[in-house]
Image 1 (cartoon, helix red, strand yellow):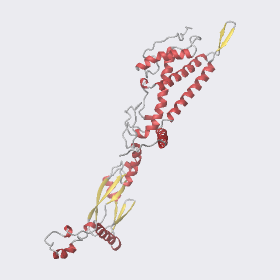
Image 2 (image 1 turned 30 degrees about the horizontal axis):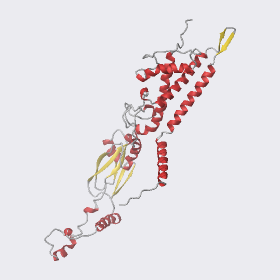
Image 3 (image 1 turned 180 degrees about the vertical axis):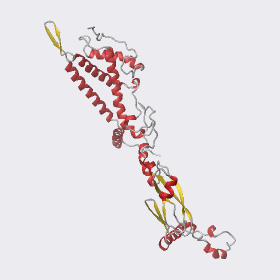
Image 4 (image 1 turned 45 degrees about the vertical axis):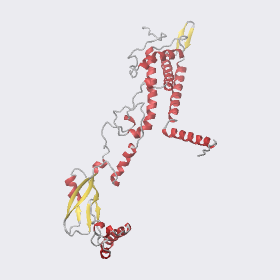
Length: 376
């Protein structure tokens, strides 16, 4: 069997040496790859013991460590920003970018309720008219409107424009009654008394209210009843006229796919990509180095675990595969837990709490400080 070369003590990184090539073109990655390989080998015992790994193994561990760091930070950022990103194009790369919080996601949810409160909405309103006939009180809107204006779906009537004339159009000018008095004072040659007589606004409002109450209590007020799109109008029509309606198509409101394809919908397509290694700060790179070492231990443990022991003159020696695998698992778990803990302390809520505590502490300090007295 041909001898497979192991770590010789040095390496020279070239593009294409990593499994995925995610960072091969990054000048900082190219510079650090050999340093990380050399550091990991020495931390594993080289040159006192042979390290049964090659440079490509160290490069693979380095690449995976960066990707794991990127994955953990991106998960945190998606959780923080998903509500602000929903509905935006997935073509936007927001990795390592400052995301401005907005109310877009909340408004999108509230918009659904706006359809029924007539304040907003994402469903088209349609209008149609029906012919009201003298003496006919009931009309089937399914036949008169749906089959003509929405033949492919069911409709829901939202407004029926069946109102009396505004009360303001049905009362006389309150100042005309004072015309005789104005003539006496010599103002008759001018326009009506509005130019010279001042009356409170509530007098007009009371007149409007009196007319509306009169219509409601003494007359058959304008109203309607709508059951299963069967419209019954009151009072019974005494002449022919057109009645206008507003409606929506139920299938449009119930359609959940109102937003175009290629927009952020959930955690899976939030546009976060692998980080640019050169943009990671020293704190992040230190974490990456430590995680790469843990991965190198794990890889070396699997290599040495192929044989439980190897023969030597006058005996055999046991390899430390189990120790390497155990240490690697513990270190990886601890590093991820440490990173998550740090990220959890930087949520918007935690940062605001810290800022509030700082302001409270500063206010308490200033209370005990002497105030200057200014003499003007």
